[in-house]
Every structure is written in structure tokens, then in C-alpha cells.
Length: 318
Image 1 (cartoon, rainbow, N blue to C red):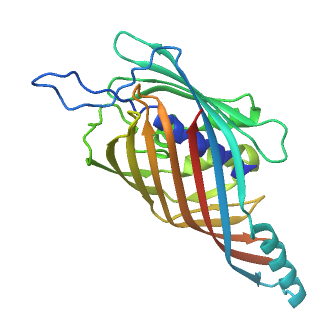
Image 2 (image 1 turned 90 degrees about the vertical axis):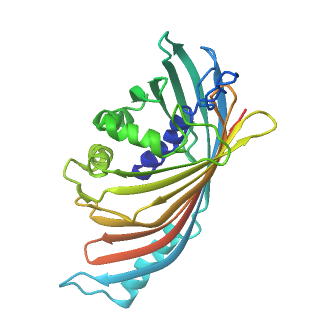
Image 3 (image 1 turned 180 degrees about the horizontal axis):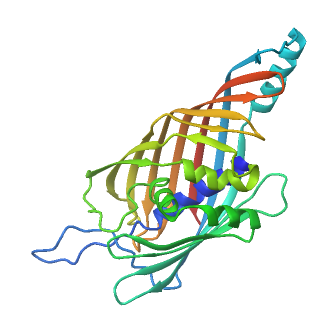
């Protein structure tokens, strides 16, 4: 459930970021300015998109060792290894969902209101996970009134604990870094951004309602370096972007009732994104690769696990 909530939140934020990628050329004329990104879709316009999330995990190593003052038999060690191997090996999954992006308002000063509804089907569950993102975008791309809501009480509690700045960082960074009004639409132009995102409070808000207020012991900041290239328009007039993000190694620790530590290493994301001529999101694909290391403590043993994960999020317009 904890991993599911984190995945759901992160899956929504790329779409939130994408919807801020507006696109319309500047007026023609002898002294016309460089074309920039603007949302021009009329109020009431809705884009429906299909989501496919494919995850592949490859187990690399399992080490089992007795805690100080404890002894493990060879049989206990092997049973523990087999338990973790069965849980983590061949964990190839595919989940599907939908994303609806709707223009809800447009004010005289150029602000555009957006409502996004995210639905993700979960294997084994009858009802999908769902939540909504509302925000208003200023002409220069600033997000105002960003709000996450859900019909699920636990999700709502998690959202209520999250710092608005953390939500804005996620909405701006977890998708394409082209998500900013005013970016010049010059083919070949490269935009680079370096950001450090504090994660202590963010994870505390997510794990607290499930594990208790004191569960999170420590989480390091996450540094993200992103590079985006605008490659021009395709035959349908959609604007095309290529993105790459490199993440610093990141670690966190949990206390009781789930004592463990985790490290995310060598994480990178590569993607392609498109934006409709009216500024609303088009098709996209992002693939994230990383190495994960877990250290889990039980009554008698410490289990260290290393595995590689590849996750691809594909978004297609209906």
C-alpha cells in the first residue's frame, strides 16, 4: 500500500507538469518575438489519455546475516533467502489507467484553470485508485492554488500533510522539465535545470498516516539534473520534446513498526513528450532505470537485498 501510494502520486505529477506546457506561436510580423508556450484551448476542452505503467524488476543479490547475539541455522538462512527471492524475482507488472485534463476557467489577466482526474486500475482491486489535481496557471507559468484531493480518506490525509512547496516541486519536476509557460519554441534549444528537493517532510507526510508519526528516521535530499531539448513539430502540429533526468543517490530510513533502510542508486529517466497545438498534453513516454538496495531487520536477522528496476510510463491520447 505504501509503495502504491507513492507510485500513484508520482504518476499523476508528470501529467500535472505536462499540462502546463502551453503552445502557440507568437504573432507574425517583422519584429515578431520568439514563439513561446501558451495554453489556448477553450474553457471546457477535455483531453482523455490512456496510461500504461510497466515495471520490470531483476533481483541481483540477497544477503542474510544474524543480528548481534543471535544465531541462524543454515536452514533459516536459506528459507529467508527463498522468501525474498520469491517476493522479488520476476516482478514484471503492467497497470493501466486514465487521465482526464480539463480547462475549467480563463480570466482576463491570462490565468488558466485546470482540473486533472487520475484513475489507476490496481490488480486484485475492484475499484481504481483516483484523485484530482486542481491548479491555476499564470501567463508566465506559475502554478497557483495547487490542490490534490481524493475520495479515499487515507489519500486525503496524506495530501493534507504535504507541504505545498513539495507538491509544486513534484508537479514541476517529476514529468517533463519543459513544463513552463514562456519557454522559447526554438528547435534544438536546450533547457537545463538543477534542483535539490528535500524529502524528509515529504516522506513523513506519506508514511506517517500508515506507520505512525515517528516511523521516518532520516531521509537525504534528492538532487535532480534535467535536460530538455525542443525538437520541433510533427506532421500533426504537435510540439516534440526529448528529456533526460539524472538523480543523485538517495537514502532513507524507517523505524518501528517497519525498521528498514533503502538506497536508490544510479537513477535516470529518459523520455519523449508532445504537446497539442492548443497547449494541452499529447502522447508521452518516460522510462526510469535505477538500482535499489534494501536492508530489512527482523527478529533475528538483517536481510540486504539489491535489485534493478525499470519502469515505463506510456501516455496515449484517446
